[in-house]
Image 1 (tube, rainbow, N blue to C red):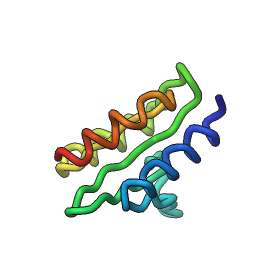
Image 2: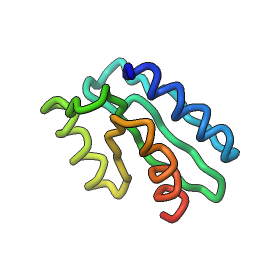
Image 3: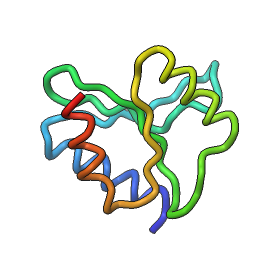
Length: 93
């Protein structure tokens, strides 16, 4: 499954939960996660999507550490089977 397919499945799953899964683009900063997940009750997380088995690049890991230091959750999603678990975890934040 391609990264784009996993990302599309994530977007649809978040929508089914009543949330938004917005494409995150920051022209002034490279390495930021692909998506911002906004779920009911003020739940927010960032998600980097990858093909199965692919890992985040060093700059992406740096951004993850920066966001985490600010108190945000950042996930790397490389398997469509993990989408439900990821959403459940974000909802429990």
